[in-house]
Image (tube, rainbow, N blue to C red; front, side, top):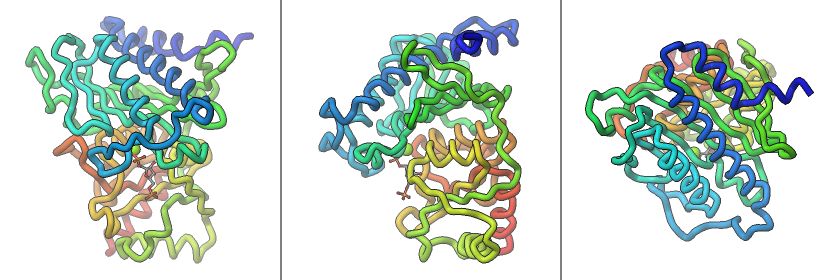
Length: 326
Ligand code: AHM
Ligand code: MG
């Protein structure tokens, strides 16, 4: 029974109480995100029987087919945040341009990937939503792109929702990483993973080895080394949130380096690598592009791609060292 008192809503309010000058707007924004995630979770769970699997026939800014659930999740997220009124600008993986909310007086800028790993949707594999929240940086009344193009270290919160064997909401406001599992019977996220810490050194690596021939030499060297030493097991779902979540809980390192198909890396700095690096740092891990901490990189555009090495700290540092040696 006691566990029912550790809900996500209560946790967010308690976090806000730690900041005496807080106005309650952040709590309301987080609550809106939690509501959006429950609506998406309900749809994902019924996807097979709702005629919502498959593609819309459209292609997004990344040149990828837009799935029906991608579009649905994107619309829900935008609608909930717009109606809530606590944000002034949004950037989504699914939209070419940032959405400036002219009517909104909110002071937050939100970046998100509404449904990551969507190539897995039709096979009922875990997928997820990733979000990052910045405080508006400009003094202007309305927000501009500059409010989004901030390094991830400026985030005030980041999180993800994983739609898996259960739905989980994992977030941090820079005060520990906490995981909540959705109890579908009562529709509440209940605290299930308090203050998650990622092991410093791991036994799992996650990479698409099909790209081996086009990796930088340093990455080939690192992977060959851990295979030779038999220190790690390979686990790769191909769904970033699911791979990241498993590695966060068990210890692990996820790698998506430059490849011939994606010379700048595949994953996006602003709404994939940035928020997850903010989370992993809070859990004691690290996110890097091979030379620089992801948290320090200032984005030039909202859909910028970046090589990503993220997870257990010592593993990521070893990759950086090997890449430096060339
Ligand atoms: P998406 O944002 O279009 O869903 O693509 C990102 C996904 C990640 O979830 C995953 O880590 C990666 O792409 C897998 O890429 P690959 O299939 O090249 O291994
Ligand atoms: Mg994505």
